[in-house]
Length: 353
Image: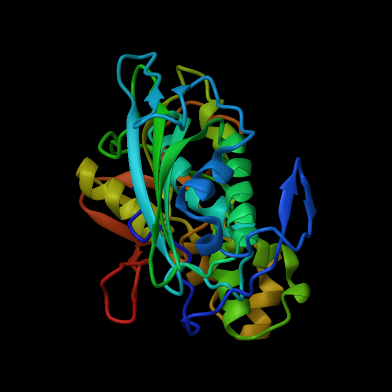
């Protein structure tokens, strides 16, 4: 489960009113009609639920989807992994920064990454949505489209959920995953192991900084997109051979140093990170324009939902993994042999968090 689990959309914007638009979905086409309910209040709870679930095909992991009091999720291994996260408007996303599709995709991605980080293949998601009664039906349609798009990308589907009236948008997602024979825990690292990462680091933090500074997102479209919708490299993890020499793993949700710190603490070891191995020239123009510390983005930014893992030394790393450090004896995480000064990542209840 990601500890921040969100988009750290600071500084918070005022609660925004979502302008209603009358839109009816026919297949994948949107047709504006005068008779279409414009808001969820006009549509009603049960019609909204039916609309959110209609016309969808479930993955093999969902034996019974929406329609009964509970879903039935397959457990081919006799067990499944489960993780949950929440997103709150103006705390984890902003409506002036992210589209409804972006918000839906992010909600699924951060949960899917958690179960993948333990080696499990996502199979099902349960989604609960709290929203104001004047939320446009069109907004919910687009949000649901984002949920399903990312769920399919991760290999699962939406098995059910709940809707409730709330003063602002609140989203809760629970992810289920089919575990491997040997789940990958945070507690398996040993001195001498290689530390490696899969996926991009620092991109979400850079995108947040661009948006917060009021810079036109078109100047850095790929960077801003990485903040709006993380791209966990699910296939890099799930495509590893069964005999891959991996010993521990974590989803990088709070920041590389913070999440490596969880591995170090759980495994009773120390980790040293090589900062030169983490330089990303693609982020340099944004960092220079903003006068930002590129290294801090990469080491502490979080929310990219990349993966950090340790591997036994002396064996080739699986495809898609890049070495960035080494496991040693002791405790804690250092950078180039020196303790990092300043915050190591996101912490929900910290001052300014």
